Amino acid sequence: MVRTYKATLLWKIFVMFLKVSPITFGGGYAMIPLLEKAVTEQKHWLNREEIIDVLAVSQIVPGSVAVNAATFIGYKLAGTSGALSATLGIITPTFLIVVLLAALFLGYQQNPIIQAAFLGIRPAVVALILFAAFKMGKSAILDKTTTVLAVASLIIFWLVPVNPLVILLLGGATGILIKRNAKKQESKSF
Image 1 (cartoon, one colour):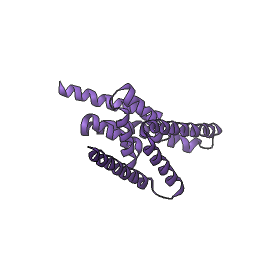
Image 2 (cartoon, one colour; image 1 turned 135 degrees about the horizontal axis):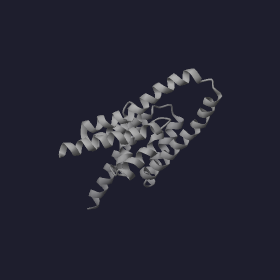
Image 3 (tube, helix red, strand yellow; image 1 turned 90 degrees about the vertical axis):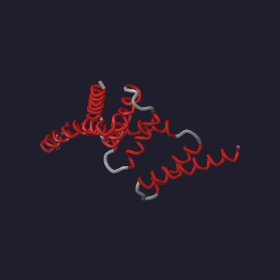
Image 4 (cartoon, helix red, strand yellow; image 1 turned 135 degrees about the vertical axis):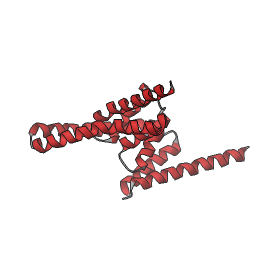
């Protein structure tokens, strides 16, 4: 009974990521709104705060955001086998599509229809990324402190040639310090 449940869950994880993967043209960031909707609203596997945490960690570790997010979600749902199932689900369609497109693109890259299609796809991908940023911002920017952190991070990212990992680590360290100071203030008030 337990094995059947786990096998069914693994299959559901695989199929969900298999469905999300090919419609995320433009990379992991374009996938975020679709992934969030599938995992939080349709499947109810994670809540919004958990998906924000998964996406934050997925950006810190090396590799594709999409693959990292799938792996973390799969692991959270079903351990190592869930991570493997989600990872295979997210990479299989992409791998097949890339192989097929590479073969086709080399033969037809000068075709005006192909060039026009890519001209239209690029702005659509930017819109998906902006939409994902807006939705994540609504869940992550909660008060004046988080607003200041978000604006400061954006300014640093824009003006200082620094690796985004440094900004993420500084943001995490700042969050820890803020939380620690808040706890100290609470204990002093008692």
